[in-house]
Length: 476
Image 1 (cartoon, rainbow, N blue to C red):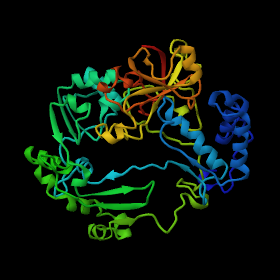
Image 2 (tube, helix red, strand yellow):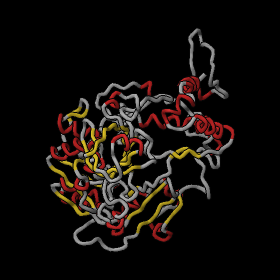
Image 3 (cartoon, rainbow, N blue to C red):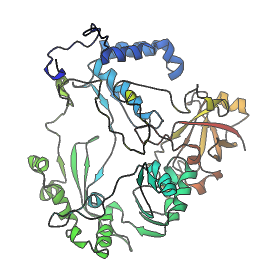
Image 4 (cartoon, rainbow, N blue to C red):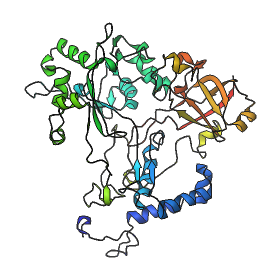
């Protein structure tokens, strides 16, 4: 019968159906997991056999267990496959949908509701859509588009780019290709608060007002369940303007002023003109009065409470019938990897990778606390904590390489190289090194750390593989 009609479907060891051998997704997952006994997994992940078995016991017999899933595991060529097992073990052991049990991210992701939503498919006051809306391109594909004029089998011509809320010259993977891209694009506009490394490539540089200088509304459904009103503290300084005002002025000069016939507060009100906001009683006036309005029901909220999931059956599912790739450039896709539990080794981080014979170290791209990606580079107080780029090396590896604390070293692979100071750090296992990825080119002794990473990406997921990097190290 159809799955939706089944009251108690068998999930394992199903007998042949009309003479055809079948295997349920559960059996398929169990078969894959069986290949990774604690004894097999331990030398790969660096966790002892006893600890792996004890953690498995806790998941099944004790709990509740909250599995904190954050970014980082996605920074590999096989990135999105790394999350399947995390969610699967939580669901299979009943550690989703009850107090204290969870699996997922907890991170600060404020969504700016004015400054950039205004640029997404705007309409005029009569509801007419703006002209010129085009396709979306993942960042990894842009250089290929500029070189070939194609995105897959479609014509695609990029003459100019408008860059905001990002600093690709510092933080995108494969710095060499990023610089090549910035040099090939005919016209570059950068809108930013500070003079970033990317801003140095701008033909036109637009000074953006700081968020203390603009009116806005922020939402955040991770660390706090509130809509937050952001009241302008002071007027924008000098010639800076909010992103909203910049878009509005550009639209007016291009003859599209009718599409932006509203101010900041009116735009927020337009965004709140929907059934969801109305059900919460959420209005601009209420936000201005209360400053923060809760949007999650009750004092506490439990996702999938009672084991009720947002699927057709209401049950957790280990299988997805259809998969929509994040991009399409005509690549061959093996959909058998995408429909149910699957995992494969990394590109370079895995010890078995052929490239490790020449480049023996797995290099981790550290997320700097003092820069939040690449911000705050010009804040002197924070520079006291992280004054210059460094690479952290395990003491035994450093001894073998003849490297001591403070030595200048060169880290390299076939994509690029970087020279910086070394620090000996027992927190890193042997064979793994780490370096912050938020420094600008001028801060390195030579080269750029981002030149070591690859801009290759998965068959369906255009993630940047910052951590899937193999390098060699020598004294400079």
